[in-house]
Length: 265
Image (cartoon, rainbow, N blue to C red):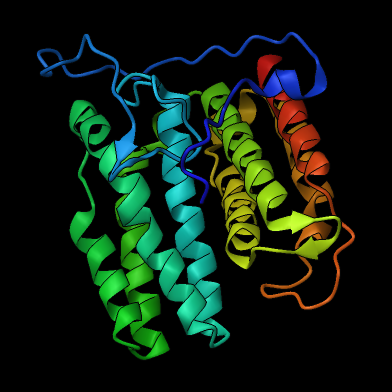
């Protein structure tokens, strides 16, 4: 990851549109130490993926859910690589969330009074590093997925917040794809795979919407689903060897259109 850059500069800027994103915050536990100060996202020396350095994940639900989505994306693509016997690559993705994302999320989880998942994250990473049987890794991944769901509390979020978090992940995927693919050549498989994982988790998040959330904006949901479907061809393989017919601009455009759909709510 290029941890020095700042992401999430406003999705509407990608298409020169002036939509406004309203980030409705979940209640923050009163009396939280330092709750009046902006949380600096310095996860082990680097800025958090997909977030500006001044974003406060304790109160910004879109960024909070977006960051958790990025964790899921790393883990998802890591599991796919493990399944296809690309174990060295899998290890870099399974280790990545704990190093660069998890520490920035801890204060936000504490403020929301939701369970953290450091132990289950470590358990998965340890199993991958130990070349454990695939069944063991899949079991650890499933347990971690459940633990992350407990921190997300996605069913309690407003539909607009969920859709904006999907835009967030898609925007971050665009940044990663731009680093991983240059003029059709995959110059960095890790970044290419990151973008794949982030968009796959965005699709899964859309599928996890509750009936009440679906009823709140079926047209917006359909518009978001259409955008996610249109970017499928950007990742023909986990570890491509041939040149790709894909460009990050497609992802930038999709992320902006998803934000516009969310803004209609």
